[in-house]
Image 1 (spheres, helix red, strand yellow):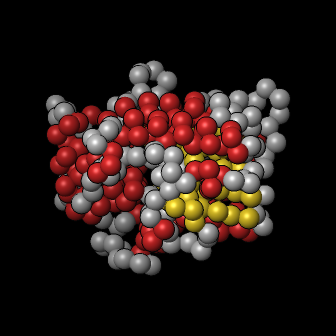
Image 2: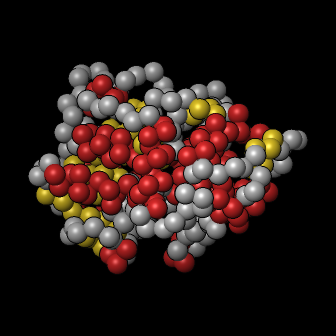
Length: 310
């Protein structure tokens, strides 16, 4: 098949390229800056928000991956547009171009959505993008994931940096909410298999991809801490400080952009657990346990950069 990977310079897109190549597909990437693409793949230069380059990128394509997220600070041309506006604009232009090109399947990676409360701004944006893309072409499908455990996953790296740099782990009220992190290897494998999976009639086209372990955010942080061989006591931060304050402090400690950390932490105010359904069986996956995922991510990270106390 001819496959387009948008977001090919990102964490998931760059890992997906060699996996799809093993299946013999003809690959093409799409990126604003080809200098940031670290994998060997032909790249069409463009911008999904403006629509520039999409027609050329999608020409002759059977399956297209939409792996674009816009939580980084906007480029000057964005004129202060919110990340949700940029994400929706990119999805709408991509959907129109995919329909015009006759693309058979669009595959999207979004985020788990809470059941009991209204989703945060960034999860609402992911959901809006999903709806646009699922309506784009007849066989579109979406995968939703919680925290992806991987050496280049920015959410995982954010947690590791906090654990490294904070002698006491002061955790706000979201510490007790639960989620199901997923190994990056399982995310990449699921995305690769999604290109060709046959969906039985009546099957939903949106699936939740979650690891086998249900943990609170406190338990997740403690597991990462223990596997890093660090002694960091956990302190409950009560009464909880506003997320607008704690997210800025956390971003500064971790050396991360608040434009990313703020929306992520806004989404931690409830359980983020998968809906009923077994996408692993549908795709023929065996999922890694959480400790194995963390160990793998830390080992891979250490091959390029030492981590504290390991």
